[in-house]
Image 1 (spheres, one colour):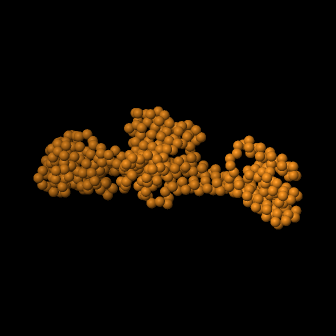
Image 2 (cartoon, rainbow, N blue to C red):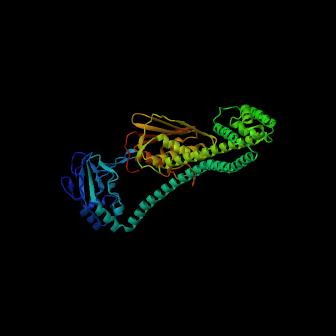
Image 3 (cartoon, rainbow, N blue to C red):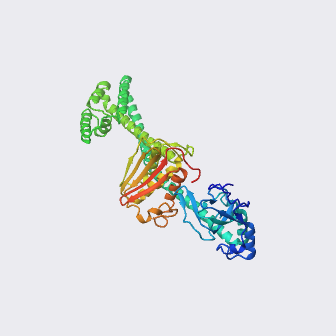
Length: 495
């Protein structure tokens, strides 16, 4: 291999060229990492590895390359550098402490060890390193320190498992919150539909009885057709009339009630409200009297009133089922059940679906304000994962505000990035912890109320999966989380 700085040969782990050589066991013994080893163990180490010299600026190991060597500083100065998705390039302080190490430090995990270096070690001055092949390092640790190896293995595996379990718990908790809100939202239109259907059964039964009574009273067929045409006109008018004030409606009901009573309709005041709601007035009543005859007017008016109420109930059922359909569409959009994981998406659709799912959790004292830039183009994204980001940020905002406040969601864009901001009027994030809110497991909530992974997961989704940024700015009463996402495809394959 060729080192990327200066074109010099790199460690190679098995090739000895200029700048490479053996090491004396006394020199190894001076390193704190090996100071407790026996002469036999030191001899084994010395014959298994070699000394490699590096110039300033050369990489000892390079992040992303195959993890083949374990490297220990003998003399000189090195710096550990790591490229991260959440914080960019992270450079540790330089060190000249003999015995510090890096490279394939987890090689003892065998098949579970990372295949590539997780960091870069760079010489910042002329440096000598003791280079040990990863396989030999793994064998030595396993053979010489079996108990320590098992302890280290347990710590790493246990920590990873704990992280995965809590991560899943966080997702399930968010799912439970969303499910509760969706259930609450679905319950209202479903209950309205059930109630309307129950009333419909009774109204249809009464309508049939009224029609049968008219037939028994001998109403001529042509007059019955006139009533059916009047029924269709009244049913079509339900919900389509120009708005009227409560006083105007009350006056119209009084006028029609008196007119109905005057021509012998016993339950005139019960029938008037439904008929007025369909635009039925004195003129229509006069037409009924003229077309069907005064003797059939009471039965005809009752039949028309039932028809109007049936139309109202059908409208209620339609509105309720449409509401349920929209909620289910929002849930599908939120979960992205019918979409490929990666796609071009409209951020506004994702935000709208998330807010819809949250309606059951948004109390009457919370005002939701949206300020969307509709010129924002579609962006390449993992839609379901972005919905999890919106869920976490909105959930945190609602928790911060309690029962009162304003939740604001706004979008914008520049030449390269989509900008999504979610703000709240809660107490804000204290300056002392602003730098820690994206750390895994860090939470300001009481034990059992939060895992400290919501913002960490959101950060990893935004930065790791989409190559974007997630930032927070906060003062008491005005907290904003800003998400920036690239308008062009730069998503990563790993979170």
